[in-house]
Length: 616
Image (cartoon, rainbow, N blue to C red; front, side, top):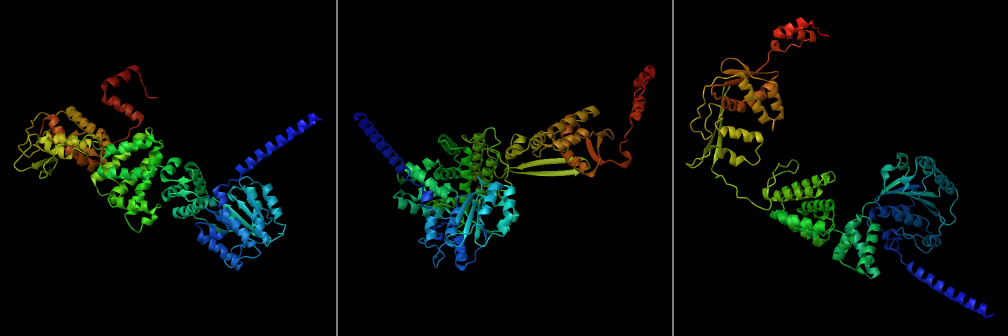
């Protein structure tokens, strides 16, 4: 007897312990996330979709109900919520004058307690086969027991298979009078046109930042949570227009901040880059302070932020600055009033040309980021170029920015300044094939000791290789005539050395190699053409068409001085002419080429005769 008493006492003890553990489990499960707890129960509580909810209420109040609706839009904007409210309202036995459900009748209470037999929800993502669709069609034949309508809500309808869509078409077009279909999807473009034509389509919009912030303020007040407006603004921007995402992020941040949501803790928890970094960077851009730009970017990377996210954020910041320059476009910025004011103040210091070009460079960096082998260097070069834009202050539309060379960054070298009153003048005189190119530097009774200084120094930055080579030739006596001085002084004396065909062709090829660095097409033409002797001092180049002839004539303006100097003959003349029809090259057959070779080369003719060779 005592043994059984001890067993009974142990049983009661264990039963009590289990009940206590179950109670603790149930207490833990009492928590409901804000996205479910504060889900709207009436049209008036739906945030950011006032035009759409007003249309639905008017159709209910007037009794103009369609048999099929399509709710489409981004995630978390209220599609399924509005479908449930609509289903509850049309079955309400005592609807209000404003088109809202009473919430007290049997149908409304059944809906609130989730036991209504008039509302059926189908998740098409997991029930997308033809068998599930046949089962749904069979359920449409059963009329409602309470209320007027039987509502079928099909969520993510675009996930249905082609066979399920085809089986659903006839019922969707002509359902029983008491059946209403509400289809919801985030990807309307995936639906068949035959489905779209059978439905009334309602497009849900993304929610604005201000609407989300106001709703979060109400939720925080009801939950007894203190929250800074700047922190809620960050949450709203992170949600990207979705209220469900905003409430989920709000719960996460509230747990992290322990009921006191601040801006600093919010950006820390969400790993969001503080907008102050972007404001400081733009100030550094405008001041040309590239070392500060580099150290700020390094600090951002050290905090664990991805460079691609940084570039996207900088591009958005520049876009906001562009919108802040005009009071009409200022409302396009989704930010708090304090941040908008800061944008407006900084935008007044930025010129439009700078913003356009900077946005273009950030966009190009974003496009090339994934393909780059050294991504950090790509971003750093982009930041340097943006910092130099403000210093250059060159007007540009942003579509075809002027090409620039990166300037010295950390050390500024003293570059010799040319007096502003030094004005090079270029004179050209063409007489037959003679070319006279003289550059005169008129400085107040001062002439530079080095003739090339006047030519090279003012234009060295941004000159092509060919221009530098040509400038060097002219400075050394290549005036296009008899080797005149670049300063307009006494021409350099060139001799009258005899002109050898091989030496001329060598000088011709050397000039073509110089052109190949910048003008590959012209260098190729020079390689295909050779000057032919006309008399002792005159040569000609024969072109096949007028376009080639015009380009060669232009090239000769630079080539003749170079070749004259190489051959030490100031009387050399080279002209271009168009090939005549009778001069067109004759295309020989293989046998004709074989015979021609024997005719030209006696040794080859003797070899063919002795060896009795023949062409196969």
